[in-house]
Every structure is written in C-alpha cells, then in structure tokens.
Length: 174
Ligand code: Y12
Ligand code: CO
Image (cartoon, rainbow, N blue to C red; front, side, top):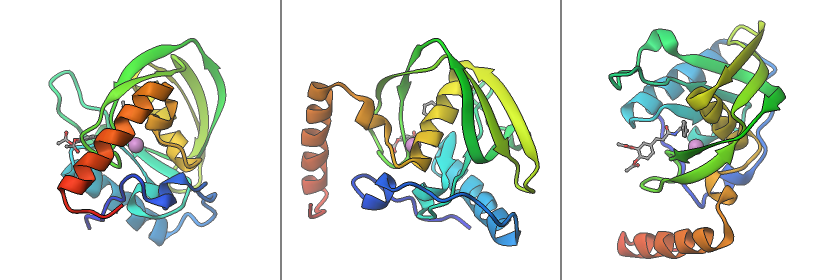
C-alpha cells in the first residue's frame, strides 16, 4: 500500500524515532509499504518517519548505471548505528519530504554501520560513496534531522523564503 509522505515543516520530521523491538508482521508490512511508496514517488531512500511511523527503520534502493532500481539491491536497516566513519565527501542531496529542493551537503566518505534486518538478525555493512551518503541522510531522519539543517546560514534563509513563497502560491497556510 502506498502511504502518504509527510513534508517539511511537519513537526514529526523533527522527532527522534523509537527503537524497533518487535520484528513482526506489522514491521514487515511497514517495510513493504515503504518500498512501494518510495518507488511510486521516484525515491532512492526512505525512513519510517517519512510515512509518519516513528520507528528506527529505513530503506535504500540505489539505481544501477542505467538508472534502474532492482528490488534485489534493496537494503533494509533496522536500529542502525554508525560505529566508524572516515573522510568527507560532498553530494547534492534531495529528500521526498522536502520536494523540489536539492543542495550540496558534506558527509563522511566511508561508514561502518551495525544494524538488524527485518527478522532481527544482527548485520554490519561497510560502504562509501553514494550508499554512504544515503545511509547518513536516512539515519539523520531517525534522529529528527533533515539535510536542509546542514546548509550554511544564508542558503537556509534563501530556502525558507522560497519554501514560504511556494506554499503561499499553492494555497497552504503556514
Ligand atoms: C543521496 C542523496 C539523498 C538520498 C536520500 C533519498 N532521497 C530521495 O530519495 C529523494 C527523492 C526525490 C524524488 C523526487 O521526485 C522526482 O524526482 C520525480 C523529488 O522531486 C520532487 O519531489 C519534485 C525530490 C526528491 C540518497 C542518496
Ligand atoms: Co530524506
């Protein structure tokens, strides 16, 4: 089932999500719905809070060289923790909860992450490049942070001004 994605400035996006304790059918349904929702909206990553569920769960499905996403490459990270990181990289990020806005963000180049899969099995992933960016972006959601919070002061001000203008134009009250 495709779920509704909550968007900035919804206050739920700024809340810390809770640890997953039950690796049950409800969690599996949530993960399946998140995948369906992410694909339907042309996303490559999604955290549970973006579909209004405050749990520490995220999914990532990076495209191949031709831009195609394959379900076999889907990563599901439950209760992830970054245990080591190295270097820095800058990538132009976007977020389904901040539609139509993209900007450069600096993050670690390489990360080692401990997490659980949908059955509660403990796993570790070591990765760099785009996947490392995606993991860090999605993990920020679990702690109630958006990539726009990482923008320099003047860029953030410009973003807020443009966002308000866009919302006013679309008839949303702020
Ligand atoms: C690198 C940087 C950021 C991430 C986090 C995951 N981000 C996304 O999946 C963003 C998706 C996105 C999709 C949009 O829709 C279309 O392009 C059709 C979009 O544009 C609009 O909403 C109009 C914005 C963001 C992972 C890796
Ligand atoms: Co996001």
